Length: 443
Image (cartoon, rainbow, N blue to C red):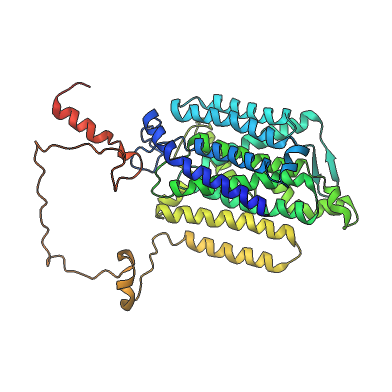
């Protein structure tokens, strides 16, 4: 566990330290697209946050390769190399898309090629645990198609949910934490070495998200872009493929008596990981709803719109931060609920706890404009938004007209690194345009 935590911390530290320089590079490189109709931010913000994440991934794998226990993952399995190859390819495609906005079909082809690269190096689904049947071996073609489909679905699910500041990285971090606990339990409790790569992938994935989150929380200073969202989706899919298609359920039957019994015990998490429905339940649901909605309207499934789940939360009346926290809550409830159910599926307390927390989540959805108010005696100790507003007569206060700005007032452009400036507004494109108009130039 200490080596896993060390790998996580190194990955998070490298990602966090590189995100600042990557932001400056993105501004210089012009990776700051104009605000689109579906965007919720108000000022252009640099992308390419996936560059820092990719180097954090490389640092995590490099450190793990030099640790005593985790070095066995690299000597006994080719899965880390397969992950790095596929991640490098999907990251390169994402960087090009963040800069040049490549076609959606080209990205889809790149995702399939990245999945194929991992399959060629051994990271593929070999068998499936089927309830009541046992362990079903797959042919090479079946395993390849299923692996490619799982990778493509997971990548696009994470990409679709990346619509609010800190949403995708936080949800993937929660999913990776639940996945890490499950994989570590199989590796440590049952002594199954085949689960070690998936455990390592989950630890590195948590480090990538935790290192990027401080820069991406609302208001975000940088976006991960497709280079980051597709990278997170591929790493998450690689862990699911490794533990679902590589771990033999018969090894879990050492103390249960039969392979079918082992499959029955692991189905609550194995099958959802395969679809996937628990680890990325909300992104997968958002992906399915988006495809149905766009197809029903006669649009392309890859056409962007403002109908995602996070957009609907904002339309209801939730603030940006509250919408993100609600999505965090449901992700944690689904992921850790499935984890608890896989540990003890016969416990009624787990089911009752999930139902109770689900009721709380529904209550939060129905209270979009609820703002707690502090009592009178505590108003001076809380921020102004939590204080009670004093009623003032409308005719008691006369509005004071604000002075009109002078027409010849010289506007100074905002320079990069100015204090109090958020996100990409440090470049000040609007101010420069105004100055050019006043100067009468055609540039």
